[in-house]
Image (cartoon, rainbow over all chains, first blue to last red; front, side, top):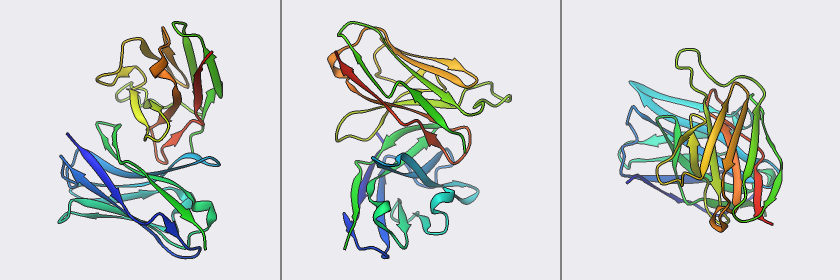
Length: 120
Length: 113
């Protein structure tokens, strides 16, 4: 079955870049029937969709307006993974970060989550 | 952005009793092309990621007990548990996937009375 395994640091300093990776098993990132998302969760903001990457003849990305100037989601077809980079982080970016697979419209598979704290 | 509003924020129900959670979207979330409501329900237990319970508002995910039901259309949706079991204690979220940014409700915490 499809599984997502997240990795990346749990502590990031203010103004630096948050970087997380989501390894995919059981599916191919360039599948034209799936999309690959990053979502975060915090007590203050609840579940917040950050963005997605997906492939249909070419690669597309969509990002939430709230982070659009700071976010990049990159697919890596060689490693069958995708990544999240969030620049210029502040304590407001402290949250549990999840990657997720959307297939047939359903967010049916989620990563285990990475708690990221922004603090000096 | 489409705003999803759930009610109530928390709910305490006796074992074996019915639990009902409501979700309202700020605009319609179905396309005329497929007449499907682009709404999902998730269950989240402590320390775990959300787990999909329903999609298309009323399609039960594989493995979800049939005491769970999803209904609604237009802008008003409901998740019902017909006979609450201890393992159903969780926070439940609705989510629209009609348009990006995909948005979630604030969550409803379901507890045992």
